[in-house]
Length: 113
Length: 110
Image (cartoon, rainbow over all chains, first blue to last red; front, top):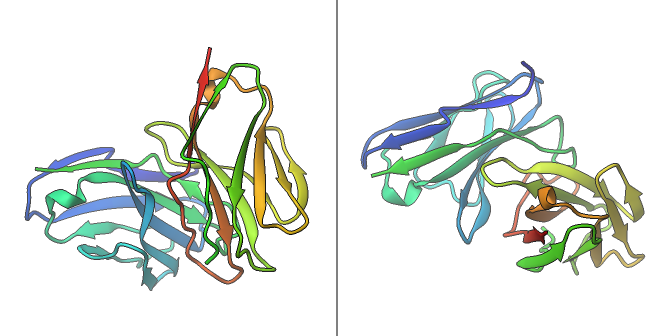
């Protein structure tokens, strides 16, 4: 099915473990984004990518790593998970620049114990 | 990046028209104004985008006055299913950083 999909939908992990959240889009959109959403903070941008092999930091990048070897995939890795990274993570894509509408995935709810 | 200010929450009743205003005093000449809607446990969804005057689609209308220092999202005859958080974004042409604030939590009552 066409669209943007995130996996897993739910994830529980322990402090210090490495976790990778997956994001896949079928539109060949150039731009992809990772946001986290916490109560009282709205959506905060973690990283974004303008094209394959081009990534840049957003508002809250510390503790996260991204890669984009293929246009359709944009995984987010927590190298050593901390409790403060417990959050809902959303991936999004847009066809060209941000003035184009963003399409969001359904989110990954991550709990770090 | 133009900063936006929206009310944190609003209440309404089924069948009423709801207007959510977003202030963006330092909007730049080439900035667009975009609104998103987010239901619980879902990602935000694009509602409407405009540059000036008025834009209307099947979901909402967007009113932008001549000075563009604010904009108003209008939802006609809301239903319970319009209960959601609504975000206003203002974009700088050439900027690749779409920034969401805390949005406006709209609760529609029976």
